[in-house]
Image (cartoon, rainbow over all chains, first blue to last red; front, side, top):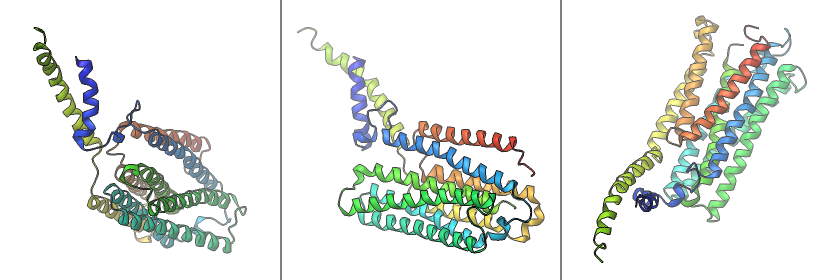
Length: 213
Length: 127
């Protein structure tokens, strides 16, 4: 008889909590494949950015004396503002998802646009920073520090840019009426990617910019 | 026919523990899907802002008397705190499945292990 009761348990649990059946997909882990895949992807991204940060640290330690280095080009107050902007974009992202979960589409759009704008501001700051560094004489092939620095921050900037494209695609979906609390997981996954890009910058800002040179 | 009345009784006895199990599953489900409020998200953002301000403060000469070792330690602590706050609250890992937490932590530990060994092999510490 307990065999009969078990399926009832499975079916009635989501109903009791007000969640739809989609809240617990019929997978071995109870998680959707997309969410599991996104976290696996983010886990692998730790290795990518770990490699780039480690390479930068190695390159900086091998920079010959007298060559153009971090002390000659970094503008910490400017980068601090950029970092703060990206950090706050994580807040607007999470508020967008929260609004979508409540079915507040208008608020969702406002927060998504705010997130994309903050991300765009960060990228604009990075382009400005690269231009200033180039004018100071630091090109991609100037020395080992320049190569490692531009590769690391360039990869991160590319990730932010991809994130902005994904944010805009959710905005278009919302405007076309294809987004609702039922398929909020798409936005949740894009949010995870966005927050990951933010935590990578938390590491870059401290290790590359703030550590005593 | 004589057995008919006994079936619902037996069924009821069997269902009772199942109902209790249902409540457990529901409670676990609720805990797993607990969502922080917008106010809590704003509080976390304010904490992150304050931690960033502390980090930036280390750039100014007034704290350089602490020495490089102390500055490194302070910056690493602040960085780790910011990292944990974003991952736990904004990425929802504090409230999500433990499987996801393990996957992400495995990535971090693997990256830390591999690259610390690499950097040590190249003798960059103190260089």
